[in-house]
Image 1 (tube, rainbow, N blue to C red):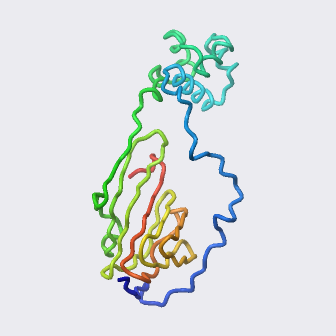
Image 2: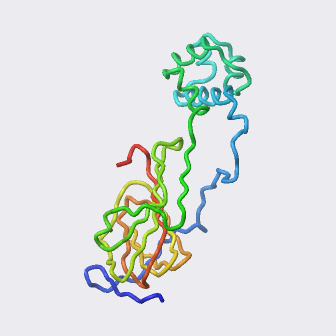
Image 3: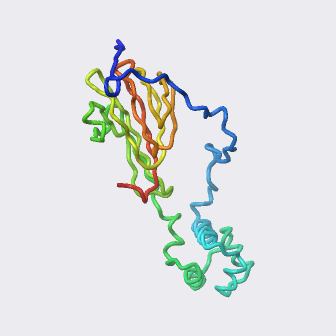
Length: 236
């Protein structure tokens, strides 16, 4: 049975919850990525993989196809065919492209050869880890982890459990973005100067660089998902 709790920071009564004016309903920026889209099935073809890499490296340098043609002495038509995966470039052509783009020849095969990882965790088999809130009685169960990957982003999904033995924690603050989803219990969660009363089914998505954390443990036990995302260069 859910148990009412009255854990307040520094023993003071909680401030009245002041929800942020921002919500999903007020988002103005169009979301352009289709979550159900699939890549070209021909990406497994070596020519297509090479073409994608050539185009990506060229765009990263901010040069046009004509610029690359002039630097490699390869015709515009041939470069277009290479970037679109229509033709298979010779080793001599790949060497010329690698010199012009400043990358090793092996870089053109990255997308073709790279493994895509997946982590499957059965119920109850996540890894218990220690984080800053552990000493306050917060239990962190890591549900999966993939280090170096093609996205350049590290994602840490946690199942966090708080019980009557848990206490609030002053604040967390770290790089990246964080998403919370309440599964059980109730909490008043702080992000910056705003307080959010959260019940099962509620979610909170925020910039984790602002101070944040549980402000009031309203109903215990409490469980919620915490998904933290940050650049690979920020890992550790």
